[in-house]
Every structure is written in C-alpha cells, then in structure tokens.
Amino acid sequence: MKHIRQLGRPWLPLLVIALLVPLGCSPVASTSSPSESSSKKTETPKKGSTSKTPEEGSTSKTPEEGTTPETPEPPEEGTTPETPEPPEEGTTPETPEPPEETPTTLGDMVEIDLDLPAPAFRGTPVPLNEPNVAKPRGKPRGPFLAPKGTINLSRGKPVTCSDPAPAAGEVDFVTDGDKEASDFGYLELRPGTEWVQIDLGQKSTIYAVFLWHNHAEARVYRDVIVEISDDPDFLESETVFNNDYDGSSGMGIGPDMGYVETSEGKLVDGRGFQGRYVRLSSRGNNVDVKNDDDKNHYTEVEIYGKPGT
Image (cartoon, rainbow, N blue to C red; front, side, top):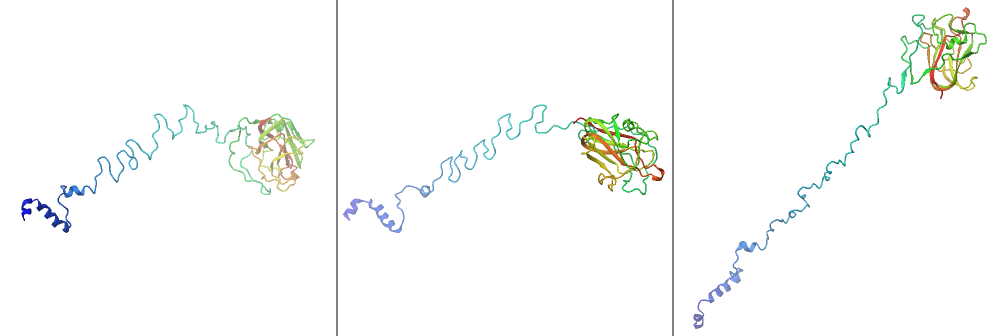
C-alpha cells in the first residue's frame, strides 16, 4: 500500500486499459475521430479526376473540345473534296452536248417537197376481181422524209426499155418531169412483163423511188417490181418492191401488196441501197384484155437519193 500511495494515481489509466482490452474496444490513445478513421479506407479522388470517368482532357469517351471524331474534318476554305469541281465557265463536262436542232424529230431527216400532179378522178375504187390489192388510204399521204442532201437523181437521165418498138410515147417521157395524167404523156409498152431502166450516171445511194403509171383512171398494174443494181444487165440486184403474189413474172414471189393508181404515185422505199441503175417491171394492168388495153404504161419515175457513195 505504501508503494501504491507513493505512485499516486498514475496507475489509473493503465487499470482502465487493462479492463477494456478484453472487451474488444479500441484504446482511446488515438486522437482521431471516427469520421477521420473511415476516410483512410475510402479515399476521395483528387480534384480534377474521377475513378469512373476519364481524366479531364481525355478523348476516350468525350471528344476534345472543338473536335468531332465521328465526322471527317471540314475541308479547307475554298475546297470541296467530296464534290466534283464545278465546270469551267461555258462548259458542261458531265453532260453530253445536245444534238443539233433538226427540222423533224428523226435525226438528220428532212421533208422533201414533191410536185404532185392534179388528180384525174374522184375517189379510189378498188377492182373487185383483182387479188392482192391493198385498200386505199382514203386520205393524203404523209410527208416524204429523207436525209439532208437528198435530191431527184433521175431527172433528165437516159432511159431504156425491154420493148423494142413501144406502142406509144417516148422513153424520155419517163424522166422528163411531166407527171400529169394524159393520153399523150406516157410511154406505152406491149402486154406481158416489160420493164423500163434508168441510168443515174454513177453509183448512188437511193432512198426512195416514186412511180406513176397511167393514173387517168383507177387501174391496178400487176407484178410491179423495182430493182437496184450496179450492173446494167441486172445479173445481181437488190429488189426493194415486188407485189407479184404468184410468181407469174418469173422473178420470185413478192411480199408486197398491189395498189390502185392515183395522182400521188407509188412511193417505194429504196432502203439506202447503192447502185447506178434502177429497173421497174410490170405485167400489164387489170383492164379487160378484150379492149386490148392490158398494156404497160409509164408516165414518170423519180428516184431520190445522194449521188456518189
């Protein structure tokens, strides 16, 4: 007891500690508060940074200020890299130039003026007993269109024929330009298959052949055949029209229809074939043979095309 008194009360804290340690309590020797102790286990991020988000200025999730990573960089001032440069003034490199203006919608085709004769009769009756005859249009023919530069190649050109002694007229009548219906204005050849032939003087490109038989009345001429050749004997030729439906003229069966003569004449497509000579054949007409009028008549032939090749 003497020693205890001498020590005074310094032993009291030690006694308290000895009593509290077995109970699991922390010594009170620490001067930190509970809030300060917990802050040691869960640190607070430093200012300017976060544990879940990138640091300030990072572009991992948020683009840097003033940038757009998903969009291409804007072009330099005055350029358009994604768009073709504008054409120079007065040019259109991406668009073909329009075609030259033409009088019609058929490219370089133009209307050719025809000097038609006066009609010699009214109406266009069709012979009832004549086979393979097309029904008349009952209205004027449309305009004749041909390439630019097309002319009448046959005017005044020499003519020959298969009949050595024509019954009437002259061979020159065929290309003299007179197409009027007249008993004295046509070349008359004997009955049967006969022909007239025109020499154009040089090989030419032929677009159309116009043919007038005797159109003073509504006659139908049989086996009308039009050929183009570079050979005067027509050993080789191009047939551009043939209405011989039964082959009776010996030049093959033709696919074309017969027709009734009118003042408009017959327009035959030349198809652009080339040749110097044009031959036109026929085998009389439908008038009763008892009247001795089953002959072949040629009033005028006009051949349209371009001279030379």
